[in-house]
Amino acid sequence: MNRYKHTETGEIKSHREWQNKLETSFHADRPPPVLELYQPPAPQSYVPDLATVKQQAQAELVHIFEQKAEAIAGKYPWFERDTWQDQEAEALAYLADPSAPTPNLTGITQWRDITIDELAHRVIANAAAWRAVAPDLCGQRQAASDQINAATTVEQVQQIMESLRNPPDQSAAA
Image 1 (tube, rainbow, N blue to C red):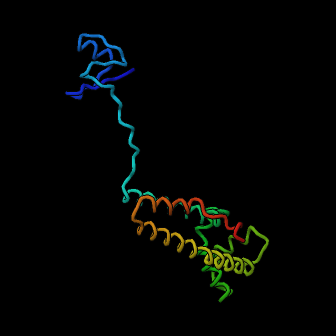
Image 2 (cartoon, rainbow, N blue to C red; image 1 turned 90 degrees about the vertical axis):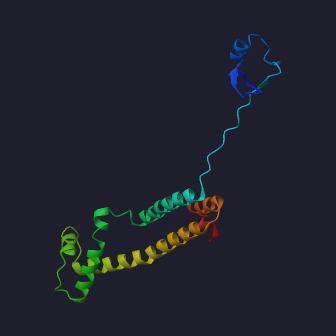
Image 3 (tube, one colour; image 1 turned 30 degrees about the horizontal axis):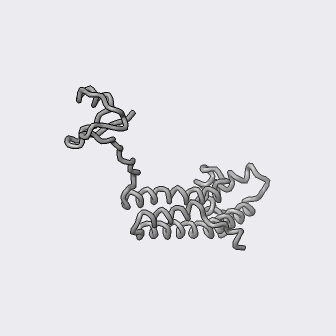
């Protein structure tokens, strides 16, 4: 249904409403001189300000790196990961003094066919492996956070986030 705008008042009404108000009929293609076909403005897309985009990017950044860490550590349940530091402390204490108390390691070995000595060495190796990965993840996340903070345009932030969401294929470079 066509809508028309009054050229003097700016009032907008339907074809039928103008015919009733003007008390005259007119063809839709030939409105009276005081009316013009109304073209609504094109919808404007919402573009958030830079501060909002940066805030959203920082929140997404945490999520992206949590997923990366989860891909590595996620093969272990949370309740086991919560004991890693205790396991490592017990393993280090045990390797320094085999008479040191090892309640976590002892509990674990009761269900497995390995000795506390063997488990202590495995725990130390796993802790070293995680320490080799965790600083890289921390550094990458902090570098990305610094880049987001330094960005001066929404487009720059979007570029940074796109590169994090879709990193280049490392196997293609090898």
